[in-house]
Image (cartoon, rainbow, N blue to C red; front, side, top):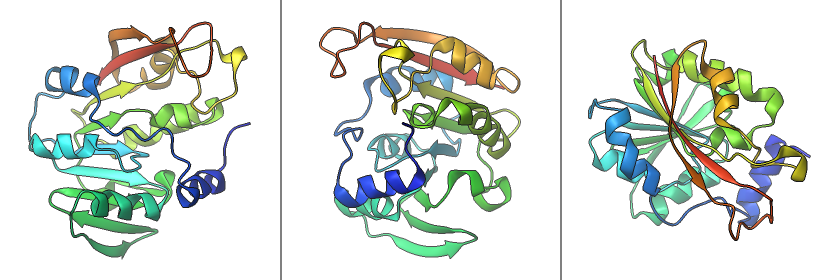
Length: 215
């Protein structure tokens, strides 16, 4: 069964966050410089949690704008990385900020380009796979609405036989990503990693598509 917003908030309260990674994503390091050539691009990170990837992006010179449902996750990100942050209300969000990184705590779908300011890149490590398939088009439209006219993006998903398990993470193949985003972006498969062997869900096949997107 797809998880509700309340379910996700409860996960952060309970510390039930196995999706959080304790290292910067290797595929981000490998592919990002070719996908997003503008080192000054302001980067949108949807459903960011407390991902350390935001530090890597900031250290490359990007302003980072994360959106995260849980204020606990946002506050923990700064505390765990030794950063003293400010917090203030902006519209329906609480914005935590320090050292070139902002995390907007609230509903991703309530964000607007006017609130967030100019954004010309985005990074999705596993945001789209956290959402049920019925929300995939809405997610793609929202990402498009928040980004500028020459935006580029980088996405990592999971692709597995959907009938073998209920998400999240949900299966999002390269073809699924093309269907969701092709109205607004050119969608390219940069790589596809085979994670089948020893996968924790005991699925017959697990791939990780590595996807670049550009207006």
